[in-house]
Image (cartoon, rainbow over all chains, first blue to last red; front, side, top):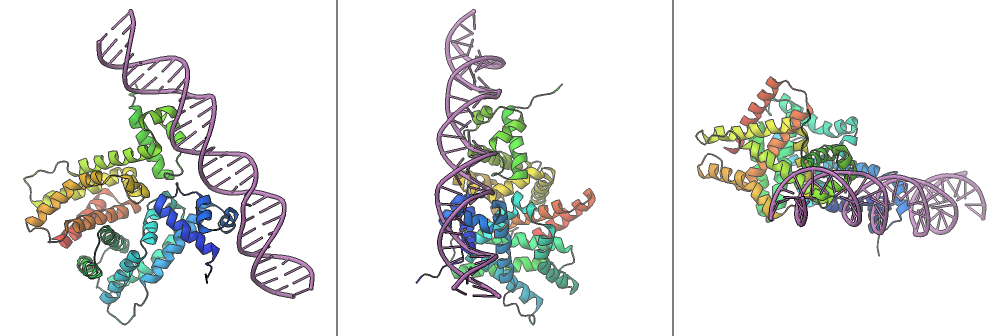
Length: 190
Length: 190
DNA sequence: TCATAAACTGACTAATCAGTCGACAAATAT
DNA sequence: ATATTTGTCGACTGATTAGTCAGTTTATGA
């Protein structure tokens, strides 16, 4: 028995897949609708414009990542362990959801990103910045502008992820790389 | 007296500007031609398809960056000084050619990137990888896969550049940030 | 049970787009 | 001087696209 996925969700899922494969420009809404198994009009019933669909897909995907990042991070552990948990969670999610992670990056480095409101951006960065600020206050992390720290960490993770995605590594080897690269990052920021 | 720029070059210049502002999908070739002050047919005389124009723009821009990176790097200096020179050159170029640098990133994180041949990618990365490999052999840089090292450096630079572009810094302040972030990177990889 | 709303359909359209073409102009070669 | 190639033009076209709309089905609630 087939359990039908929400059509709205199915549209997002299909759009993600196609955007990642062909890009925004080469993915017509008609193709998304067809491949999602819904009528053309249904897509526009949920998303007034193609742009709105793209934006919704971004915030939706970004939220899923953020949620996963902070999963199972117990407050009791040391800041280093919490940070490491967030770090590994992020890379894990990126590796298990390559298309999603790639989409986030593709979107962030496109003119679409400027359509995201400043509030939304601030809101999404808030938990991370708070966490880092706390680490600086506690004299665990090097004192530096928290934005700079955040950007350095983000790009580091993006880099590691790119490296992992480019090669074919066994799970063990992958774990080793993640551990070692974490150490590099941790030494850099503490 | 106006010195006329090559029409071919003018097309590239305009295309870059528009792609950065509106994205590939929202930049019709007709708009590029009009804004570049050439006829529609002229654009297609030089570039058979829109994709070909986009690809040519990428390789052209990437080459310009690579050339600048290695400018005034005398072989006599220490590996650290050479590396620092490349580092600062890169960020300098990125800051002075924001649109160009942004375009490179936008392109690299888009499905268009897969249209670049493996040879072209290898060719462009070669000088950097050779340089890093030499640094590892000389026991100056930490022993690690050179690809990983390359990716870490690249993403670090991308991060710093993003940070610098986001804020409004005086030249002095900017220099300070570059110096300090270089030290972070250098300590991480040595 | 019926009424109202929400989900859904797919044929349709107005607009836009990538790319063509035939003609002309300028440069270059012979 | 003449021929040939190269650069340039812009009107044109066939295909494609985002988005509409009038109507049908399904869910919801009173």
